[in-house]
Image 1 (spheres, rainbow, N blue to C red):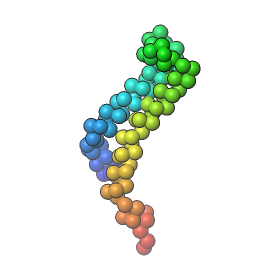
Image 2 (image 1 turned 60 degrees about the horizontal axis):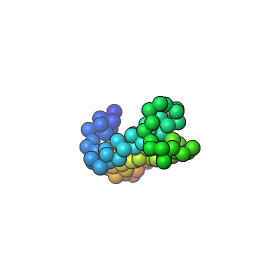
Image 3 (image 1 turned 180 degrees about the vertical axis):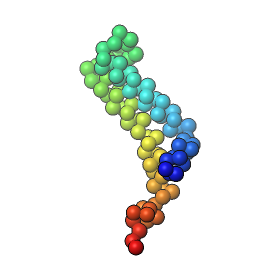
Image 4 (image 1 turned 90 degrees about the horizontal axis):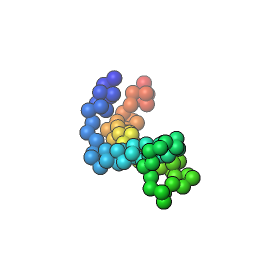
Length: 89
């Protein structure tokens, strides 16, 4: 439980938050494009058959940078040798 509390107090760099926000916008635009809503966020030149799926994939990929950064930081601070389940005896 203590690790979960420490995880929520971690400061995330602004560049990662900007990538996360951009990814959320792209994913939302992709979902709206796939649902054929009357709200057209994409210009007419970008309305290709696979544009919605591409936006969704790129957006989700950009949003994965924050969890990947958090996991990397956690693994750096808690190497596998120091974990209780890896100790013998």
